[in-house]
Amino acid sequence: MSIPLDLARTLATVVDEGTLDAAARRLHITPSAVSQRLRALEDQVGRVVLVRSKPVRTTAAGDAVVRLARQLALLEHDALAAMGAEGGDVASVPLAVNADSLATWFLPPLHRVAQRRPVVFDLHRDDQDFTAGLLESGVVMAAVTSREAPVAGCRVRDLGVLRYEAVAAAGFAERWFPGGVDGAALARAPLVDFDRRDDLQSQWLTTRGVSAGEPPRHRVPASQDFATAVALGFGWGLLPEFQSARGLADGTLVRLGGDPIDVPLFWQQWNLTSPLLDEVADEVVGEGRRVLATERVNRR
Image (tube, rainbow, N blue to C red; front, side, top):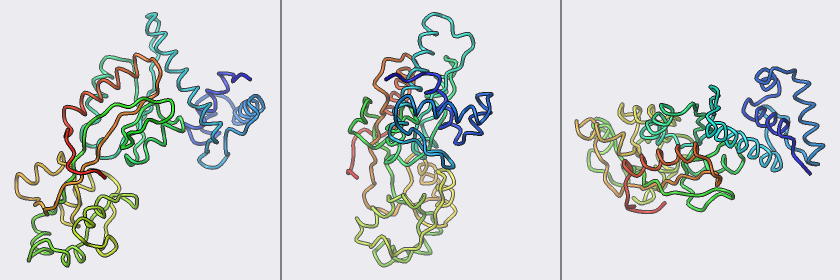
């Protein structure tokens, strides 16, 4: 069995674009031609590679083909660069990162690479507990993740610890915690969650002996907007030290006490020899180790 590279690249383009019509526009062919290529690929490998939903979804076999297409594209770019024959070709590097890292420390190292290399970054934002899944499916080449065990076919490097502490706007604390931050007050006071998968606030409540189901919750699914909601007094929440430092210094935010929650972060990338991907990794890992905490107060 062999996998025709042009068909593998077509599948990767369909996954990137989400629909056959959008992929056809990018490839400058008709949607019918895209469909024919996918059928030819499935005939070649003897397996279904794509669920034709909106957006499309790959099967396990499709994940393997997409990984192959992305790896070959990266290796081709590196080979052309080594020959001095890039010819203006710009490499696209898809990466997965959690929202709080993206909002605080992750972009500067990528910018340094982009200043030296003809590269663009396709960033996929997800919770750090789920970014590793994007590696497994072949959607991204590397990820910031809380998963220490390596994804199959990947290698892992330690980044450091993203430390969160419970804070609230000073006015909010005066209103909701006049007698101190005790269990009864925490059960009544509104809090801010990032989304329905965000469990940091619930973890912190549990350490204070409060049922996570008691307080009312706002949900603000963007890192900077989440921090703004806490600063405005919508509710209390756990913020990374990067985001809470200024407000704590000028008195607009106050700490609610209790232990911080530490989220260890790791860099996982495909285990292949690629000067470009290694350069990205060295910049990201170096930045993480400079700016993140190095010792954990507790484990999740």
